Length: 149
Image 1 (cartoon, helix red, strand yellow):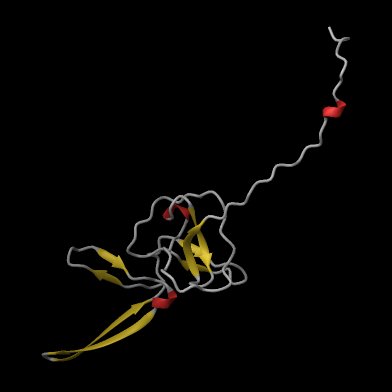
Image 2 (cartoon, helix red, strand yellow):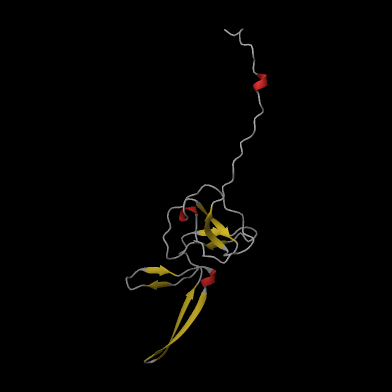
């Protein structure tokens, strides 16, 4: 694996987004006083990803699901489950990208989005809990308790 670090003025180093969508070879030619200088910047998979997520089956592949410029809270698991997958992709405000439930509000879960093809915060799906129905046993109770001491 190889990567490129950008040195900022403050001396911090920031890893470029390692997502496959951002992999590229960038060639820049700059005119210098003495001639040409070729600058090659190569960005690819790197170890700078904070969180890796899996796509659902059948792909079941890992991808970097954390944004490089974001600090995430500790991982946690929120109650409920992910809502059913959408059948259509709405054209509304983009949801929040997330690596785990802890990056979402308490009433949301980090779920795979079939439209964006990454994990986003979605309202948790509460599955109603049905308790089993017990048979009535009232008719089995004794009506005469006079013999008990």
